[in-house]
Image 1 (tube, rainbow, N blue to C red):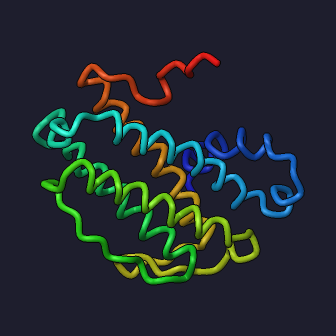
Image 2 (tube, rainbow, N blue to C red):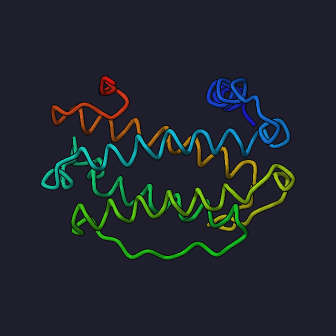
Length: 180
């Protein structure tokens, strides 16, 4: 692994790993951390998809960038593919199009995170060194797939937050919590 990638990984995972205190977390620190990251990032990404108005799903900041709807589809595909590989299953094929409605795309997004939650609930650290086949004839360890998945959530949310802000909307992580 390149030094920058290792440093980035440490910065991403260290705070959540240090916050772990229960027995499950100490026996499965990697999967427990990914579960925590999924909980936070699923709320952020689903919240961003809900926040973006339906008529803005075709929005793209520049002609070279993907539309917001395409970003949602990309997250769905990444979740379904990566979580299936972690579970030792074939990735499920979901037929989505940028022309699909906001309701269709956000449902697919929610379903993809629900699937990842099911997979992560059954996962533990014992198989992290297991090789997993990836597209393009590549292989990676189960640990690498989990790390790529968590890093992808952060990357995708950063993009979604940018799209929201460019449309005068606050991303979920920037919104004030309701007063109790």
